[in-house]
Amino acid sequence: MNLLLAGSFGPEERLAWTRALQQVLPTHRLVADEPALQALGREHIDVALVANPAPGSLQGLPRLRLIQSLWAGVDRLLADPTLPAGVPVARMVDPAMNAAMAETALWAVLSLHRGFFDYQGQQRQALWQQRPQRRADEVAVTVLGFGQMGRAVAQRLAAQGYRVAAWRREPAPADTGAAPPAVPAGVDLQAGLAALPALLARTEVLVNLLPLTASTRGLLDARCFAALPRGAAVVNLARGAHLVEADLLAALASGQLRHAVLDVFQTEPLPAEHAFWQHGHITVLPHAAALTDERSAAAVVADNLARLVCGEPLRHLVQAQRGY
Ligand code: NAP
Ligand code: GLV
Image (tube, rainbow, N blue to C red; front, side, top):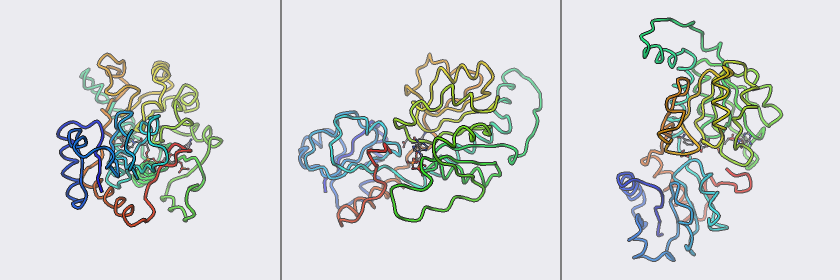
């Protein structure tokens, strides 16, 4: 098969992907740049391997049978009005990414719980002052989203001793007849919008790992912050458009929220003049909570391509009507 690699890669990243994919897919032809695509002809491409490609880049591929995302989140891909209709889209699901996300979430929650971000602020003022030391089981953390990332995060936080709740759309997966995986020990799993207010009311640290859809866009807003206990903290590791940025600044200014850890933003890269950079109660990461590891992700791609070749069911297909 002819595979098109498309996305917003830097030169080194493109090379790393090319090497990793060629290693696990030696019998397929990888078309990794525009000159190679022009030489082959767009009409010969069978599969597109994409990492946040520019809108329109998958047009004019009449033989396309699969769009395999190299990113976990497919919101930008699905928002492309020129996305070829009827071609299945699979997203990246890689345990290595889930583990990386769990590490980031643990760092954020631990730092909030033990006041390490506050100590960083104190260091800048040469201020020697100890803060109360609470136990992990006294800290209530809610994880919004209980999918690939949310489940791994909830499990990791519960294993660390936190009082963990998680929130999903449906009580059980709507898309499979298979028995749902067991809920990790120590995780209180809730489902549906009706459960949210009571959950938020007992949440000290809110970790967002929802996909960006019409129902979740702007969910982290003034109403959500007001439903949290005063002095709660927010960790957004999912998508920038989940958060209403002005509402966050207002909630921090009023003391309703005490700190936010943000990895994702409405505009990325975060503009140099943005208020978040210098804010004493916001910790900024450059969309680095869980990068795709091309070594393990290439194996995930190879597995799905083998399934395509054999006519077996593809894994991790996106359901367009639910948006994730
Ligand atoms: P996923 O496996 O598709 O899981 C989505 C979860 O969200 C599911 O539990 C789903 O509920 C729940 N959900 C969806 N819509 C909902 C709604 N309206 N109300 C309540 N729950 C809802 O997604 P994932 O792979 O874990 O990815 C999670 C997020 O992380 C995405 O936004 C992705 O873009 C982001 N991400 C960020 C980074 C980074 O580096 N910052 C890296 C990778 C991914 P059901 O279980 O009922 O379906
Ligand atoms: C990163 O944000 C991803 O969706 O893989």
